[in-house]
Length: 316
Length: 106
Image (cartoon, rainbow over all chains, first blue to last red; front, side):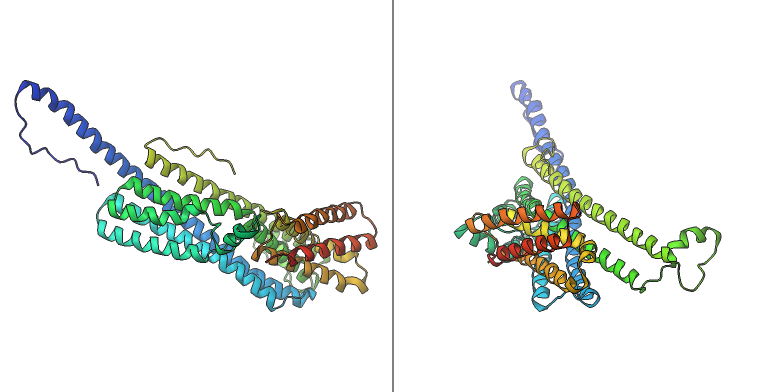
């Protein structure tokens, strides 16, 4: 919180002392203004980070939903193409979905942390902010204990065991919980920024490591849907008149009922191919955008901690 | 990402992306065999994502080298419009190596 209150002390009128009053006042003002600057920057970072972590949580929730769709599509694939899909396959996909959902939870925790930090920066209710930060610290430690990295480890022995247990989740994130405690005690925005930065770095590292998996899971789902859609077109299970609607709608006409021409199916399959390719490209772009946002937040937090201007220099 | 997971992913996504084209080339009597190979490749990949593969295990490293070679051969033969017997053999070889890799996931 920023205070710029009127001085109440009566300063001595001596010449020597007076010569110190102005510099001291300026120094005091500089400190107070620096505090205000930190507070303003901290509020700005909290707002941006809240938005980014919310996007990240939505990204993970969407990916978890895609795993559910993959299960449904695989069941359909079994009916249409006799590609076996059993209980063990379903269980494996549900395990993957569960891991993705944990990441959504972590991103939501980060969003809550950003909100808490923003509240503390505004300092309207430090007690409430401290309580929220304390709760989040506990949640962070609990989540980390059960988190498992999606890609395989590249190490054997103890290191691999650690990976399986979730220790390969950046240690920075567990350190964040400790720094949070300091933040709660001191309510210093820079300490808070350090705690949040640890969380952001942790999620950033996790995301960077795993994002090829996210893209591959989404790509596989779209490819499967694309293939099944074309199979269903071939099996005459699809109403194909929409393929000629763009030509008729501007004039208020509707397609004629009855059996469609053979080329309707070709046009429909071309459209399916195109849309599938567009969706894969779009998903890759979305994944990259989240990555860039995480880097930006990391740089902004560094600026709050160091008092220097933010610059995101890492490349994907 | 580890090379073992990458090899399994490459194999599965390739079969998934080229499913119709590959299945169409299989003789009717062998189409069920293609489905079996596809499902196995998919299962290998999902297993690798949900478990741990040790990329510094010499057995994994040797299998990944074999699998990458098999995948390269498959893609080259499909591009070159090789005979279906060759394609079928390429697919079976790559998927079988993938199964050996997935079996090493813990």
